[in-house]
Amino acid sequence: MEFTVPLGSPFNLGYTLDSGQAFRWRRKGEWWYGVVSGGVLKLRQEGDRLLGSSSSDLLGAVYVTSYFRLDDDLDHILAGVSKDPAITKAVERFYGLRIIRQDRWECLASFVLATNANIPRIQKMVSELSARFGREVWFEGEQYHAFPSPGDLADAPVSDLRRCGLGYRAPFLKKVAKSVAQGKIDFQRVASLPYEDSRRLLTSELFGEKVLLGVGPKVADCVLLYAFGKDEAFPIDVWIARAISASYPELLSASFRKKLRKDGKAKLSPKEYSALSQSVRRHFGEYAGYAQQYLFMSARESG
Image 1 (cartoon, one colour):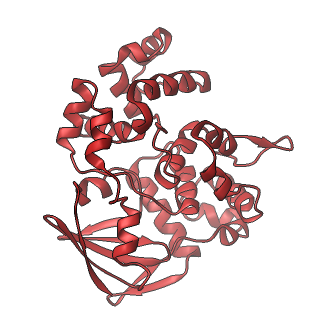
Image 2 (cartoon, rainbow, N blue to C red):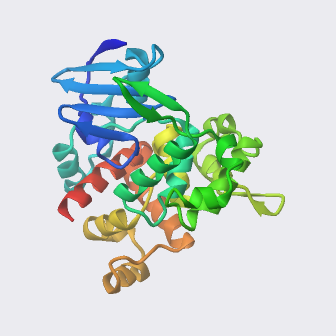
């Protein structure tokens, strides 16, 4: 299926797909290939339009518009977060980057794997997992694999998951898959709740046992931002902590600034994470997640 999507508002395909939000996109020449929603999507940007083709009639212009949130007023969003020179510079540099609306299960599973791993490592784990457990999809004469269902991974032996390079993450992923497959986490309920309540639900305990083992506040914030449209979510990792320390030191506690000076890879404690999350969300407002994405890209580029 071939299609064209007119772009009536700012969008940059390359910045968006190379920003660490999703892990199943690869660039081949002028085209981006992605495995999404059980099929394959091929896209290229030409000025104010996207050219595309896909393996399914369901992956057309309507899907692409929703996936990239092209109906959002990006200029309004960016004007709302551009409150200081640091974020304004990042917005100008990566103008057109958008937050993606991903499949909820795949996003959750992917960010469980993302703990203590860089983007190439995450991409490799997700690819290996899909190749071993996912359904085959053919497109342009090449074989791809859809992301496995929660049930597929819940039934998989931990040893087989480890063969995908997951390491210590394998039992975490299996337990998360089992919780989702058994309906212990209701994605519709997560979507309907206010941000704070939805994060609490993803990181909470049920009947004395943590429902989503391996899902801490940072993973929860990634999932809420990239899959549930909770735009105030502000995922905080080492890159972002450094960026905040450099440009917004007043938002960090004195103790963590001192810790970060001693060790550039210092991690936030749960209490420190919660305090910084509240500070940055107060500063950037309802679209804090967009500020995070632009600051992350800027921090990654500057090294």
